[in-house]
Image (tube, rainbow, N blue to C red; front, side, top):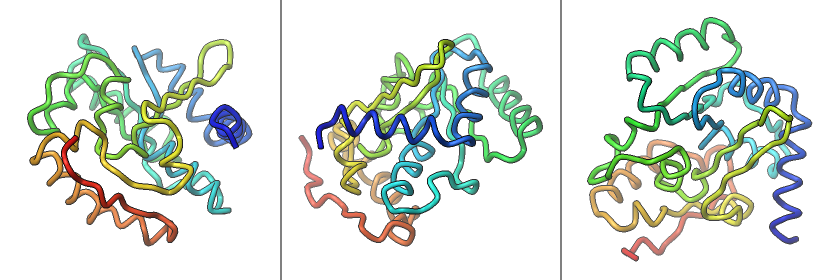
Length: 194
């Protein structure tokens, strides 16, 4: 099946899921600059869908990202707290990508949420989804959908190019233990610098 058909099927699955549409609407209505539902929230939904599991998992973090230099770290924490109070049925994680480069060794400040997502540890995690005012969904996957659709876990070019980042990548994989939930995951053996 070609990528366009796969992308449309994925968007349709999100659109048909009441929890995901509620979450996407909440994110849109926050009116934060360059905001997305991202990373594990999107990846896990797709993997669950492909595994014939319930796509939405209420225990999965709801990873909301945005990019706004005018919102401080403290304000971001307050916004996350308010989200948790107003919508306690979801596990909110709100991150302003202006500050997140500090968690990745030898990384320059990000220029946008898309830039940040492209530098996430795994290609399958580098994904975001957002709902626009006119109710259209936008999917961003800088490395395509193949890794997610094939249950493949491999590092992004950003992580491959630096030994310290690759150590973080390896530590992250051993802590996440994704293969317990998705038995058909495969992990890239090619971990050489590009």
